[in-house]
Every structure is written in C-alpha cells, then in structure tokens.
Length: 206
Image (cartoon, rainbow, N blue to C red; front, side, top):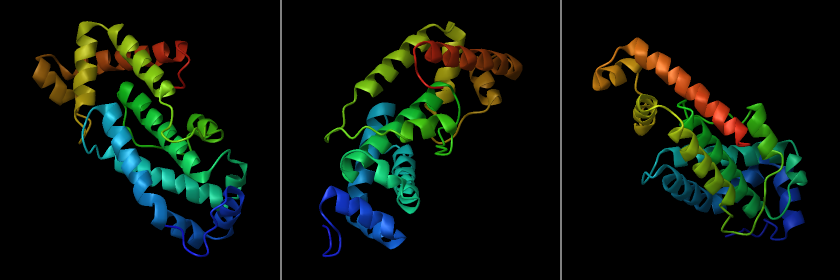
C-alpha cells in the first residue's frame, strides 16, 4: 500500500519517483511483489514451464529499467500510469527472451541492446491485464520458422532449447543423436541463421 508520502495521482507519482532512488525503492517495496508475480506467471506461460527462473530475471530487469528511467528523469516521458508501464516493460523483456530462445542463444537480457532500447523507448501502457496480441504473433512466427528447418535442424534446436538450466554443448547433443559435434555445430549455425532470417522477414526485431 502507498505510504503517506507516496502520491497516488499519475503525474505526482512520476515526479516523486524521479526525485530520489529511495522513493523508487519505496515504490517497489510496495508494488514489486505484484510485478515479480506477473513476470513469473507470464514467463511460465510463454515457455511452458512452471516457476521458470527466467521470470525472476525479467522481474529484476524490469525494476532496473524503472530505476534507470527515474534517475535519468526519462520516466517523465512514459505514457499512462506507472503500473501499466511496468507491465508493458515486462512484456517487452519476455518477448526479447523468447526471441533469443528461438534463435538458440542465451536468454540473458541486455537492456542496453540497441534493438531492445528502441522497444523500451515507447512502452505500451494498455490497461491491465496487458494485451497479448504481439506475443501471440511472435509465437506463431517462431513456430512457422521452426517448421521451415530440416528435421535434423529441428531436433538440434529443440534439444538446444529444452534445457532451462543450461545450454547443452554440441558434444552432448552429438552423443544423443549419434552424430559428430562438428555436424551439430554446422547444422545449429545454419538453423540459427535461418531462424533469424525468417523472423526478420516476418517483421520481428532480431
């Protein structure tokens, strides 16, 4: 719940958050639990894994974005209520994770990535619950692009992406499939490039 010093109106709250890191900390102490819960629930929904640890990463990074925007006063540029803006940031970060996941790379979020920075500069602030149309389109596009790969490439990409604790090495995949690690490496590189080209043609930022 807001304290006696925390404004409840949109403009007042944004100005108050930009005044001090302590104010941002107080706001997140009151509201961070809901943002973390939403990030974990949405990440689990997208990746199909309950209690996916990537949800924690998204929640923490989203709160980091709030701190950065407040300290640089860029928070003054956001549209809509702060709460809705935070949900929008979380959606964007999850989409970024999913794109990297689909390309077979680490799902670590780099908020300084130029493409991600462009998305974060204009965060939608739809009323909660946030609209999921962009995420549905991304899921459809990724599925379509995966189907364009050869059966062996699909196997390799699936094995590469299935382990949520670590990205399996080419040698591990090679042992499972009964082929050489070099073969895995070549086919994985081709599959990753095909995924990137396909997603780009469909208008997805890669």
